[in-house]
Image 1: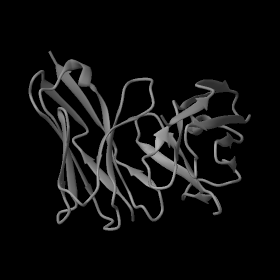
Image 2: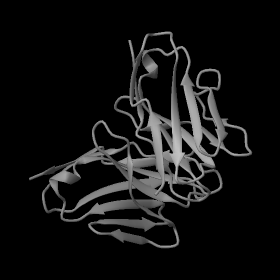
Image 3: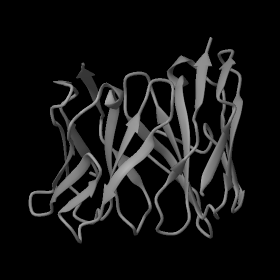
Length: 112
Length: 114
């Protein structure tokens, strides 16, 4: 069964710390792994994504670490800011079927 | 850039009635359109995926009879929630993509059933 597991369900860190969000998957055909953030009352927006050809993708303070062997990927938010407070969703899809399977979400709170 | 306009943003319907939501892709060709539902306190469940030249594929627990979808061209898709009841409330999201590109999501339609 296609599934993407995400943890923790909620996370609180102090401003300036690094927040780490984790996801794992089961389907080895998945080849695209995006992270989205969703602010209250809004739709999710793509934050950063990675494909298995690399094991790390950086975009400013946001970094995805990808471990194909263990079927895990994580989002690291460095120097976290109160404005980063949101719900973060990981997802995975296979190019062959275009389905995007979502994780359960992590509610991230950054304390100033 | 690629944009997806989704409307209405918010709607209230009486229990047992139906409501329709629409998505318009701008700046790209929506060869695939996915419709999702985010129920309160839950993640996004895929309702169905529509890809040009293929039949619309519904996920388990969702049917065409309850959520009929139209994808008549490469810029438009609509979905209707028929006979809406309390359990149908939530945020409905359309996502569109062209080929292997990333999904672009609409702003969502928040459905409240009373």
